[in-house]
Length: 150
Image (cartoon, rainbow, N blue to C red; front, side, top):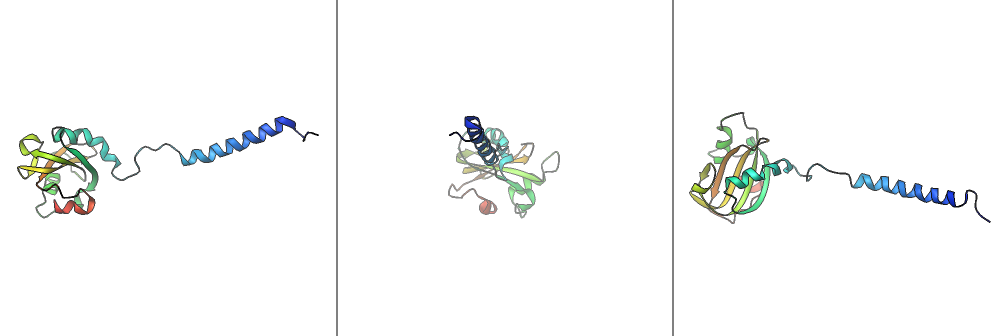
C-alpha cells in the first residue's frame, strides 16, 4: 500500500529538504568585498607601490595605519605624511618590499642611500606616493609591532 501523496509527496519533501539546506549553506558562503582584514583597502595601492620601487623586490606585506600611530619624533614616515602637499593625510598604506634598493631607483626616497628593505608610504585612500623609506637591514620584520623601529 502506498502512503498518502505517493511519489509526488516524497519528491516534494526531498526538494524541500534540499532547498532548506541550500538556504542555510548560502549564508555560510556569501560573497565578500574584501579579504576580511583591516588592511584590505591598501591592496588597490599595490601597483603604485610596486612602481615606486621600480617593480623590483619581493612583497613582504601591506599595512593600513593611522598617521597619528607613527612615532612623531623624527620618524621619516610621519614627517612625510604630515608635510605632504595636498589634502591632509590621516591614514597611510605602508607596503614593504625586500630586495636591493638604491635611492636613485625609487620614488621619493627617504632614509639611507641604499637598503635591503623598502617601505613605500602612500596616502589612503587615493594611493598618492608620500615616501619610500630605505632601511639597511633585511632582518627587520614588516609587522605592526615593528614599524616603530624603522
